[in-house]
Image 1 (cartoon, rainbow, N blue to C red):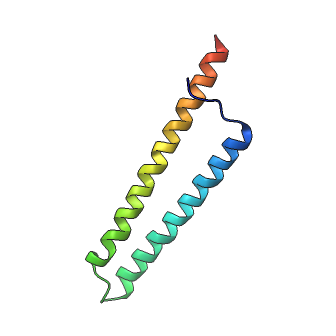
Image 2 (image 1 turned 90 degrees about the vertical axis):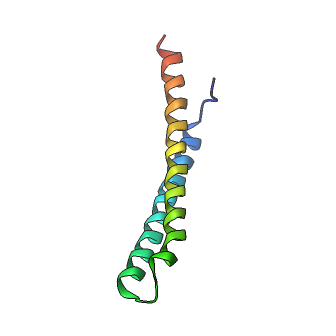
Length: 80
């Protein structure tokens, strides 16, 4: 059984999630702006940043699934 998270833990998770999305948005805007405005900034330059953003999104998806699993165990343990 997964440990039950306190409301404070859930708040921290949500704030961290918001921070990750803000960081990813900033990086994506930076890459997009550079590709659009700078002829010296190439797709090869952008790829490492784009791969990092994809990895961050994957980590965030894993976090969301962990929260869902935690909430499912909490809901189904107390509804029986």
